[in-house]
Amino acid sequence: MSNKVQDLFDLGGQVALVTGGSRGLGLQIAQALGEAGAKVLLSSRKASDLEEAVAHLKALGIDASYIAGDASDEAQARGIVAQAVERAGQIDILVNNAGATWGAPAEEHPVEAWDKVMNLNIRSLFVMSQEAARQSMIPRRHGRIINVASIAGLGGNSGVMKTIAYNTSKGAAVNFTRALAGEWGEYGITVNALAPGFFPSKMTKGLLAAIGEDKLAAHAPLRRIGDDDDLKGAALLFASRAGKHITGQILAVDGGVSAVHGS
Image 1 (cartoon, rainbow, N blue to C red):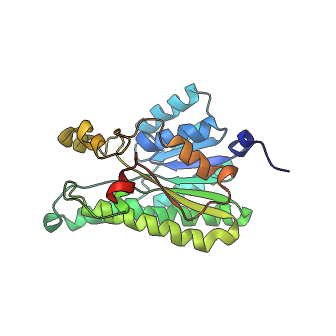
Image 2 (spheres, helix red, strand yellow):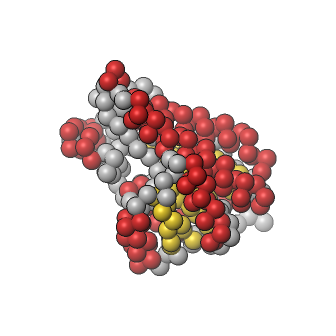
């Protein structure tokens, strides 16, 4: 017997761990999962930011708490997962959202900055996913991993954004998603990625100020950039039973930019 469509999106009894969840896209996704019934654990480096985010979610009636830690550090990343499992008993949904960028011409880009971006944007995805799978998902034969990539990982660089490490890391996140999906499907774990276009955030604030929102919006067929609601439905699809037969997929949420420009 098939389920009612509303039931397919219900996350009641599920536990979601969202990295970089204290603001921006991570908080947007966490709110969506919480509103669908999931218990939400947020993680980022700064406890003060996390406290504000948890207060915001609790005001909406969402069961939320936080674990402070740096996902780019292996020991801290594994510790975040261990604390989440200890506190909640399981991790059903892992959202690898924490990310960083660095703007510099490729010929001048510092190696230290390259490593900083790579450690958070791609190595942390591997470490967090591995630990969540070991501690909860593989033994329970169930899991949903959602990686936040970017349309910057779907093509090259127009030259406007001189962010060689960021673009490279997001391209790696795209194929990491596909490779892991192929390997872990036998354990009942789905692995998918969201590839946002331009959304207002701390990371994009400088670029939006330099180029202008109107100019960036003009590149999108929908003539707009993302808002506070635009990732919620896609994230819920990947996290819920509605998406149980979807894995290894990259969904661009970009107003159509990647469809007409390639990235």
